[in-house]
Length: 136
Image (cartoon, rainbow, N blue to C red; front, side):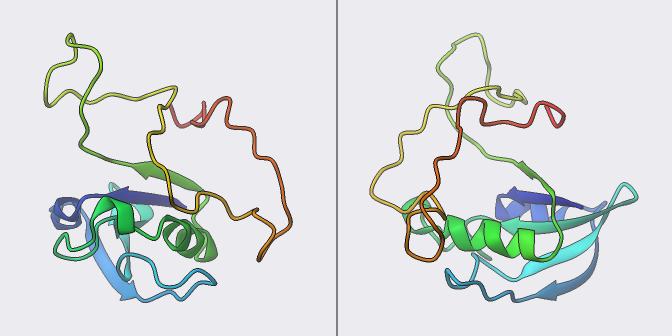
């Protein structure tokens, strides 16, 4: 099943047929909002607004681990994340849809792994190719 993580505006897509909303509790706390279950273009999906309902959670306070854990716990196997960001190439104009193959991670000061030795054993996760080639 596909999960979609996006902005709060994506929850109002007319083609999204919502069947239920469910609060999922995880070992990392609650995700940004209750998960929204539904179908889109004939596919079962689970939607999550990363900044919460009403865009109330700033980026540095998003509980990313709870968000991913919640999606995985309900059977999501593939995630498509939609975001509005800047670009480093002036040839890419605002409004252009880009499918990246690499990432520049400027985040710091927040937990970014499940495998830090607290709840799960220490594990090194290969980040060489961060995006799934099949989904790309």
